[in-house]
Amino acid sequence: MQFHPEVVSLIKRALWFAGAVLVIATVVTFLASCPGQSPAGLPIIKMEIDGHKLKAEVVSTMEQRTRGLMYRRELDRNAGMLFVYEEKEQLSFWMKNTFIPLSIAFIADDGRIEHITDMAPQTLAPHSSLKPVRYALEMNRGWFEGNNIKVGARAEFTLPDPTQ
Image 1 (spheres, helix red, strand yellow):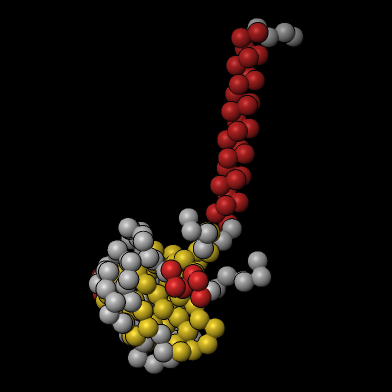
Image 2 (cartoon, rainbow, N blue to C red):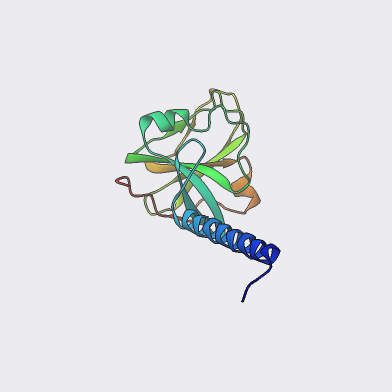
């Protein structure tokens, strides 16, 4: 049986299109299952605090922590930056060269939020943890208050494997 050349051409195009859709779907599925990376090349993790889901860029080296969110002009609504330190210490942050108004939560090893404070952009005023902690989470200013997240709430997260 022979088909008209136009029908053959139409079938070939449909098969090509179906194959392209399959490849795109496979790539999207693969990327969705991989740990994300921010435009700055930082790992992104999923976090949850009192039922509120967010994504956080993880900064764990001195260079990454020093830069933080400096020079950025915006931060997605449910996105933030998690600062990770090797040892518990009295953490202190300022907002030099940071244009986004932020709130910061200082987090204990067990995920409990120890202290939350707001920070104004472009200032050198220090914002410090009340006691030694290993984690600090910066979010858009008012995010914690707007989600009724208070001191004592627990942040749930898994840090990326540094060997990968």
